[in-house]
Image (cartoon, rainbow, N blue to C red; front, side):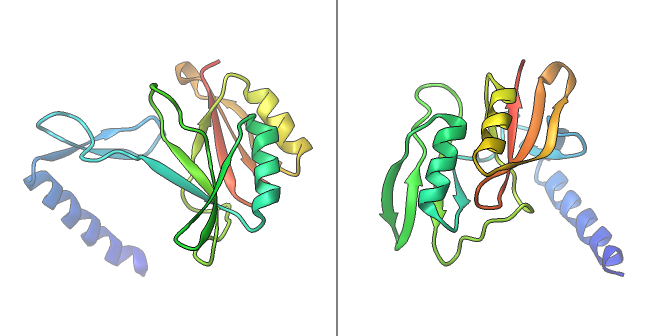
Length: 164
């Protein structure tokens, strides 16, 4: 019954977007669409930051340092404990934090963040060796490379991508 309501809402949203000069284009992930403007073909906004919910910040820091090989900067922001991922430098990409607080609940459902790696096999092994679990094994996505998904030490689903 809830799908019957969803279809008119989806159609209305598409019409509003069309009238506003927006079109959709396929994204890298099969079956999804990305809204772009006709003027410049770019997204009207870009992702700039992410937060991964954690229950135990020390355990999460140990996990991500072992698995991804990065170091974190701890801070308290708006009453929440944070461990900031290092900046990505001049290249493309965003940065984020491990976040512990009342509004943060680890989950294997919801938004997935993809970490790019040159060694997807090594990351999977290190994740499994450090309290994580493989949820989706390394899988080819053709010319776009390889993907996999792991569960981190806190219970979050995290995706991996490699071009080789």
